Length: 317
Length: 310
Ligand SMILES: [Zn+2]
Image (cartoon, rainbow over all chains, first blue to last red; front, side, top):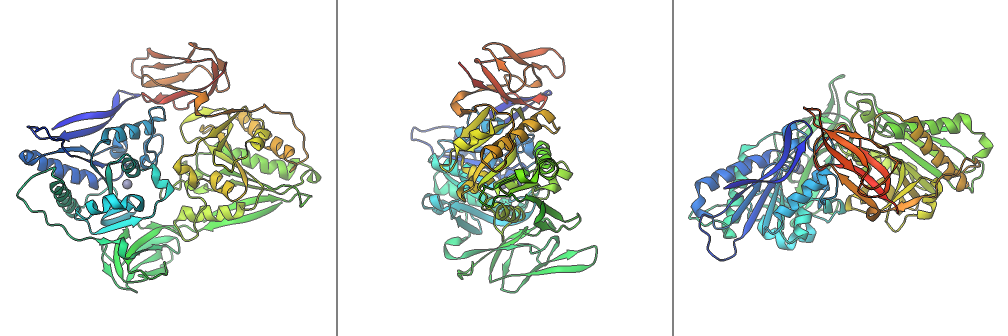
């Protein structure tokens, strides 16, 4: 295990910004080319679920170093200043790092940081970028895949023990993300979304750890006796994603505790006005399916996302 | 003058957000029409000030018969952010200028973008007063994407010293400028320094440029002084000066100043010990177009941009 800095910049007053990576590699190396996997999180500073997964993975690797046959690079906190200050974007510049790739050495500082990351991850066979939704929404463990790269990444996604795989259309804005940049550079890159911003969901952390170990075993990055049993995810190839946005501004009071299998007409929650005791709107499921995204932060404006449901193709979406 | 309500959004605890446009009807229905968008984000004080003083100009200072084409001015869109000194939409921190052309069934800021876009649709010309995305003090200039729809010749009518003719990035496809162009309006972004205080001289340069453009485009009959014959720049004609050290940054030159190669243009002072630990030397002969507007600077941050001459 070796920790190094992939980017540093001295800060104005007695401190240094650094983006760190730890590398795990086998003690003895035989001559054949080793596979390499990179696990990234904290591109958004307010998302911490990935840090737990990476901790669990590092702990496992520390205890099972003899089983390691390839290279595992972990980058728990890309936006390290943001992680420490509960800031989603890059502090001071207020830039979403996941809209800044591929960056360059001559750009403003956030562009230099992402450029350093992309260059360091470059050459990995596989990369996994773990996000935890944001502070507004809770997500069940899911993989997001750009249609453009689904051929090469879908099979890997199925190994990761997630509940849902969302294959979405190519959106130009997403070209500025880590995953698009890495995929276009030849590293098969998957995006995991799970849990909620600023929090840890232990159960999800363990679930994804099993998935990552399973994938690494399948890829020959680890060799071990242990069997990692993974669940079969729902996949958006065979259904549609429905969005439920707030029709009114107010306080959202959910009727469900967490994401769940739901039936058409099930109540998802109310939007209320505490000042007058009025219910502005009651939200119901438009169809059967799994509610894979549910609003966590209660204050909503007209348009705020309340839920996403994955259901059968109906044509009405 | 007619005040148009462009959008209204209720809030749990705040007053509703009401965005209004000021419409000034011209005397000639065949004359070109122009729309001007002021502060799209909070902290965009100069765009707000420029747009509101333009409202004052059309409302109180210009004889009605001199206005030929219609003028719509939306001084501010994100009042919620301006009022609490935030930059983006206060609840979810999303940037309205990354939501165009908008979507009426989407997220809050997509809905805002959609209503604004509907109001802006159909104008011949569009001007967006944009705040610099990075912390920088600059000369006001035109930013025009190489989108295939842009009108570089028309951009020169503003008479700014500089036009930044910029290669598009993928995220630029969701900006107002690009989408407005796509829908047939010749749109221009006037880039304003990101400072939070109004510099009346810079504001006046910007408003004169807009009036000059309107006069030259026959929207207005109001001759003012000529501007500059704009220089068109792109990435290759700009030299980037990065900070070799971190500390307290002091610029010795202002945007617009001419500097010669190896001249000292700024310094970095050790933030705890007070001694000068770095001097910035101009890498070429040129004109300072912008410098870092924060007094505390990170190592590797872009400190100056200099347009090369000679
Ligand atoms: Zn994220």
